[in-house]
Image (cartoon, rainbow, N blue to C red):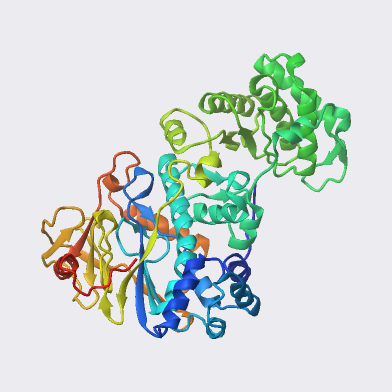
Length: 557
């Protein structure tokens, strides 16, 4: 069912080329260039500025999110530069009175002056926490906004969705992502395959994702393959040799008919209801892939045809020394059908003394959602692997995470957007973010401090102001403190090792395990506390007061 993945070195080189092709510097909004021109025209192109990236609400009504897309952001920054054809196109779309010297300025731009501090990819994160800090020349960091948002918004959303499916499924059941045909275009499909694997899925049906990202790929047959056959006369070749090296070819048609009669007799089934075309399809596939036989068995009737045909062909393979893999169910009551299928497998194992039938897997696929997966997990069933497509990759419960990118400092001075809607006001200044851990090892509060402040210390009380709590101070004493963000890009170079999808996937599971169950409940989770330090809270109040008095604070978008 599953094929081996590509090597990590091959994946790394291919991914960098993929990013350059998928995310060129023109993949942004036009107003980024008009703003950059205005900065340049005013002589502000060397001013140092700082932007932050964050989201305002945890997705899917949940208590957490997973931060993803950092890997792609780093590759994007490393390759960011304008080609001659990029600049010529900009000449044609920007206002005609744009100074021609600006286009020469663009031609020389890169990210050598940009520094990025970020929460590591795969970390559990929460609303309102500044996840990325992007610092550098004002027009350059402005130009990066749309591309960075594009790279992290969907990646984080679909990664979080995958983690929720994994929580609903439990740790033991394997999960197969199979949403490429339902995804929002080829790039959406590739991004979904990568980040659902990171979020907790084991396999993908997407071959290109396996090539690019090293994800194990899986798949055997669709209903169209089964229904394309009508008769055993279409099976060719009609022979198969045993796996033990005996080159004598066995008449597999005759052997299968004999086993089918014995299966029908064992189960009291009516041979007249068995679909010959389905049997032909199973035989043809088994001859092609005798070690990878896993057919879909509900093209006609599971109980009257599909299951019987599978058992007959699988018994032939076992007699010849091969190991059939299992079956796929794609319609009806998956739980009930899986129990019926497993009962038949056990009967065959006992009656025919074929131990391999005890280890056959049952794959369930049928428009699986988070809710139906949780329901499946609460019922008795024998499903070994669940395949999920539409509801996973399209994030039907919430189509966007809503990450934003806001200016917080220019020329060393804090900048704040003050809005009539408190939810849209920003927190000014360069910051550090710390996660406070309790005595049991669970994170319980993220505190956002000014960058110049001393970090919180384990065992010492800390006074802070939870966001959205009407300026009420809270005193907490952490057992342990960790700094959430680290420098990942500086002077044009990635400064931390780039992780593979498998390595980041392991980080996700480790990060989720530390989260308290009350925060990762799928329904009605407890809210996680994000707070401002005393000094940062005071600065926010001063700027808000100054804004109402029409002082000179710049209100940045």
